[in-house]
Image 1: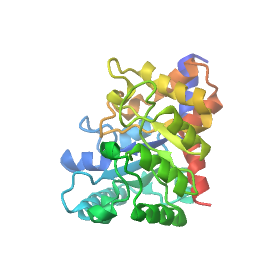
Image 2 (image 1 turned 135 degrees about the horizontal axis):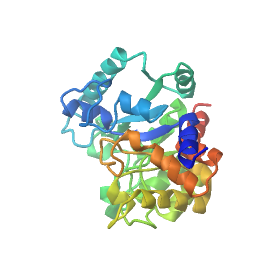
Image 3 (image 1 turned 90 degrees about the vertical axis):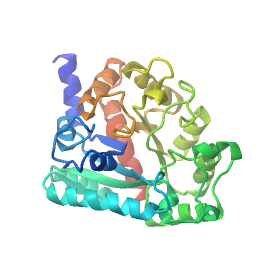
Image 4 (image 1 turned 45 degrees about the horizontal axis):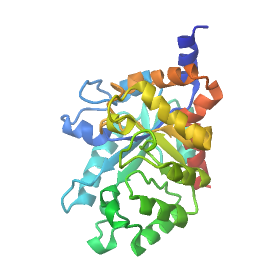
Length: 302
């Protein structure tokens, strides 16, 4: 069997999870494209996901830019997406927990996991923001009292906590307060690329100690300041594995939100091929492609 054939076999048989995309709003802004329509205007749609053997994806709505109507903005976007799910129910289904995800997969469909970026969706005042974002790192702001209560309630409800956009102090506060594993859905390694959204080695170690996962993202500026490339993207995966082992790294594309290092989802097999070329076993690649994120989801839903 050729190396490419082996890569395609591993890629096809793996449970592939993308822990972050901005596809819902991208489809709306592109003229309310239907999910079933293959279009060069977006990086992710049903035909591309099928071609790339994507089994589950986190479809996020970022409410950051909404002006005083964060909740309405989110509801409008999720309403659009729910309609698209209904139209394409034979292909894709919203999954609310790990049981749903596994059942959807057994049914031969793609699992869509809903996510929200920015707790402003709760319409809190400035005094009740959950935490400072990465833009506010200078203040060393962490979780507010409201933020602590929010994390505790999310733990109780079995909601997955994503610390991708939080300040560094907020990150450590979340790890301290939450009793469950968390993820950083789309971020890379600061040791390789000094971007404010990337994690330090100590943060990656802290995430791993809580049995969490970092989703390596395809945003060029997160990969390398001068020459972002697939090779350099794989270096970030290597770095996490060398630091904390293969159980704490996954993929978080940020398709349709800046993850342009890959043209679109159809190029995902290139990552599998690259990992195998670097000497990772098929089992290790399967962990990176999705098994690690599945483990976290199983844990928080117990």
